[in-house]
Length: 168
Image (cartoon, rainbow, N blue to C red; front, side, top):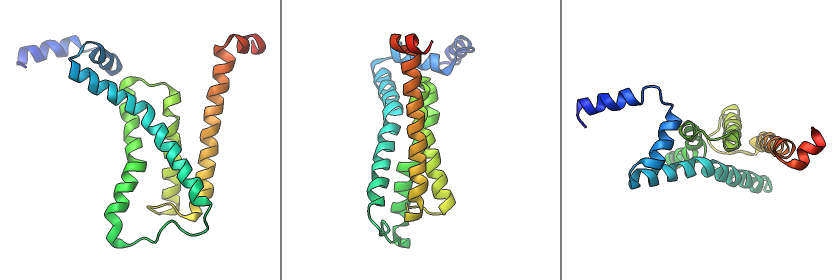
């Protein structure tokens, strides 16, 4: 791209929001760009929810046994860091990417879950889940469930004919 073409593009997109620009690229970009952006949008929508459910199941399963999950060894620190990054840090980075697609708040609820779980790890000062974290993780699960309950009841009351009839 020449400097004149770059200046023209910058002039055209000067007052355009990033979400509008991403939507335009998804509709009118080349085939490769459209596929990548659609996959990335799908990832930003559904991967945090999937990770949240898998993590919640793991915490529930872990709480059914009295022993700790594993005994940490210094030699395994790179493995612990990789798991921590994939389960806790990657979803936090995805929240920034979800801004590009202007996802509604329903898709951002799992991020509150991950904020709470990360807070539990910071409070307990541990890379891995311990028995002392189970209660705080359950609390985060309950609060996340309350967010979903609020969203579902709001949808029923405001967006259905029956809800508007009963609660208006």
